[in-house]
Image (cartoon, rainbow, N blue to C red; front, side):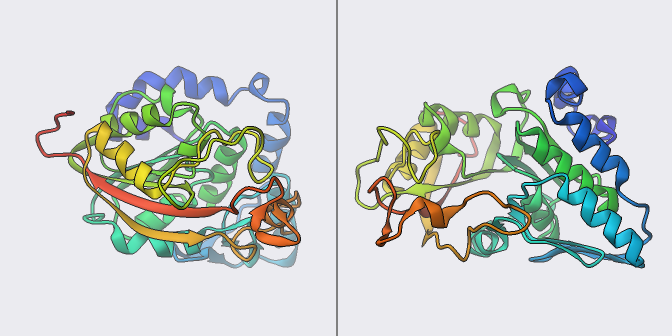
Length: 316
């Protein structure tokens, strides 16, 4: 990726240039050399068309040998979490049917046309492609998991679009900048201080802009604070109620917070596949009662709340 293009688009991000370069260094991760070799092995294939729909698709004249090389290289970037993608007939069946989440979120986004968007916890950038399809002018994704950044580079080798970026940074490392819409989907419950995360979302939302906050939730009004693991995850610190999510947004300075969707996660939406061979949701649920996790806690349900930063930009 030509990071200078991004810095021209959002000059404030130039301050992170050294941190970004440090992440793309062989010493940064033990698997970096293997992942880079996978990127280098991606075959040169002429693109005839692309479609940023539910299944982000790139088409072209790939022969059998090229398709085999492509599949092998992409498999070296396992596990694939967010998708689906189709590159020249190679179907990347990711753990999450992320298109289902997007179908729940997209109808409630306002003024996405020409919007500059920040996607916190973007993963491999799947949602960024869907945002561009809806008319966004720029998407800056932030995710500290280097593998996801490498997956994005693999996809973008063929889409070749300098409007969707994935930066290998934590949200806290991102230089201050303002965006028309800020997304945080599947992040806040991993934060030890979720209120601080929501306050930071406020800081990156321009006055009059919109925030979309998606999270695991519990019913009722009380948040769940797992004493140990939740659905076999060790990094879930607080599972709020939808009401609490709205409260956090209000405390941060947002207004007009509202719940727009609540959906129980099923093993059709999140599951193991040949592209994500580790255990998934099925193994995290009580086999005798799928409404509970293996820890005896309420099974995963997710909510989407949205709010606006006041035009005066003031925080109460």
